[in-house]
Amino acid sequence: MKTFVDQMNHKIRLESVPRRIVSLVPSQTQLLHYLGLEDEVVGITKFCIEPNIWFREKARVGGTKNVNLEKIKALSPDLIIGNKEENDRDNIEKMRSIAPIWMSDIVDLSDALGMMRKIGHLVDRSDKAEQLVSEVSKRFSELRTFVESSEIRGKSVLYFIWSSPNMIAGKNTFVDDMLSACGLVNLTNLERYPKAVQGEQPDFVFLSSEPFPFSEKHIDDFHKVYPKSKIVLVDGEMFSWYGSKLKEAPAYFKSLLVSMLSI
Image 1 (cartoon, one colour):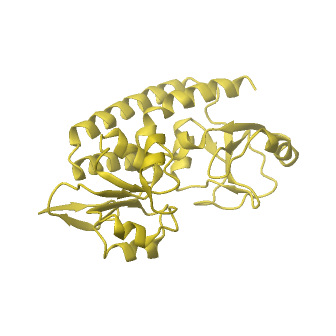
Image 2 (cartoon, rainbow, N blue to C red):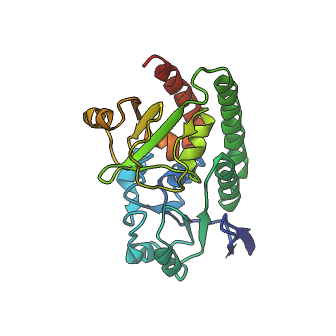
């Protein structure tokens, strides 16, 4: 019997290495695939779109907020992996009678790296998890060096995640930390995911591809509200997925920042 502590300081006890895992968070599902847990992961959510082969073939247990408890129970998991922000608290509490639940709580890059290490230890893939942590850390270090000499550094931004109502990523979010990694200043001082305040005119407005799928057709509408801002479509996964996707994020951010200078 081993004891593990999750990122919400809850203890879980496992008799052996988990062999039947249900993952309730897309970015953590992708991490489990990266760690090589093809056979061990038996259930995912309908939003766990990467890897695509898992999305097609693994049992789906509902959404991140509205999981189907009966489907999870039928999978007989020996471990459920969730996240404080992405999963519904009441559902999580109900699932504790089904299997041990390990929860992440992620606000910044440091939390994400800690999650990788902890999950790697939890599923007996510590070596591969450490390699991932090392690579991600190295690439973000290179990004910091790039940002320090970039003309984009210090520019203000509003990052939109939803339409009608228009909602943005505020302080104390992982998106905000990724904006900081890009050298950008989140114009809002509000926390979490507030409605956008009229009158604010940042240097840039980011329209994310998720959770609301902003696209070219939305740009003109935002130009009317933010006539002094440059409107940019961005890949939401790069800013909000905190698993193995973080290996790709720094290169994407560099390319994005370079393109922003030419707008």
